[in-house]
Image 1 (cartoon, protein in one colour):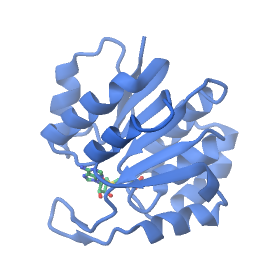
Image 2 (cartoon, helix red, strand yellow):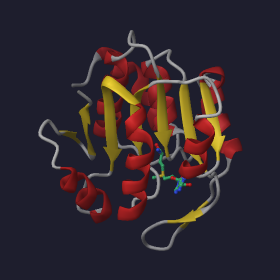
Image 3 (cartoon, protein in one colour):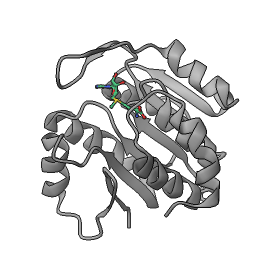
Image 4 (spheres, protein in one colour):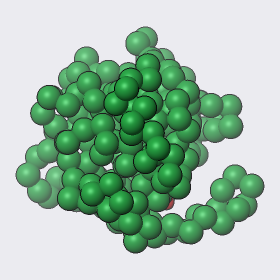
Length: 190
Ligand SMILES: C[S@@+](CC[C@H](N)C(=O)[O-])C[C@H]1O[C@@H](n2cnc3c(N)ncnc32)[C@H](O)[C@@H]1O
């Protein structure tokens, strides 16, 4: 699972603040990497300070769209997290990937609405890592997964007992070919 390329990328990912542990980053990196020569863009819902975007940018030269309201939020225990797009862009600038990543500073719902205003962009990798409550995970999936092309990845982050909303929703999908690694779970669209 851990390739030499990931080994080289990891220090940059690790040094970016965020919520993506090493095994999860390794899986995300591999998933993006294997689709390098497939048409399509990458969309992540939930960007925070750019850890997953840094991981994706180091894995691929494909365009990445990072959807986040970029507003402060409270963690499960009430801890307040500062969240703004300057932090996000600073992280990407450190690895010179700002030109590959477009932040969409809005809710997932609004971003999905605006997605249709431009040139159609097939999605080859969707990483759902926004609000982890059941209703939000469901909404993110229902809004975005229809745009993922056959052979593309639909990935959920935090498929773990700490986040029952994610587990409940993913389990309800009853996906036959569900792949899990770390706290990432997902499947390749047929
Ligand atoms: C778990 S963090 C993302 C972590 C990030 N992927 C990383 O690698 O560190 C969840 C993010 O989702 C964002 N978020 C929550 N609800 C959202 C919504 N409805 N639309 C867009 N972003 C949302 C929050 O602002 C927060 O930055």
